[in-house]
Amino acid sequence: MKKRWILSSRNLLEAAVFLFALIVYNANLRRIGAFDTVASSLLPFNLWEGRGLLLDTLAAGTPRIAGYSIVPSRTGHLVSLYPIATPLLVTPLYVPWPIFKSAGIVQKVGVWVPIMEKYAASVLTAASVRAPNVVEVHVRGEAP
Image 1 (cartoon, one colour):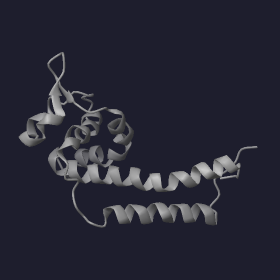
Image 2 (cartoon, one colour):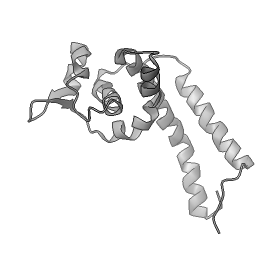
Image 3 (cartoon, one colour):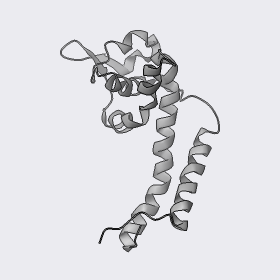
Image 4 (cartoon, rainbow, N blue to C red):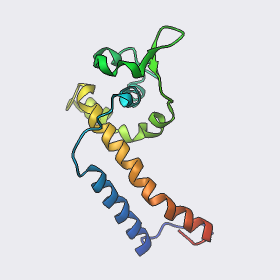
């Protein structure tokens, strides 16, 4: 018999904890100030636009101080110096970008980079708050 997701008090509590953590992580309303995340922040935009992992197009508008995270590859294309696992993981969270771009609401990636970077980092961090509870439930063998 298939288990169904039921709206229970435990699920509501877990959702409330996730939302509370998300609000707390965004409460300061500040950008992520490190430049080493620039290349990783640009990859999801590139992927949504169908350009793959090469940063040739978007790197042109990158501030020179942030350039150390974008390096030439053996083939001469610009790529991220850092691993690509996290940008690939958060790419689905960047779905507002192609929606707003196709609607003509916003055209410049530079406006969205800090917003989406903060949003994706906050969602991953808030999810990590909930993760120990999910593991505990599965270890105990309780129904979700």
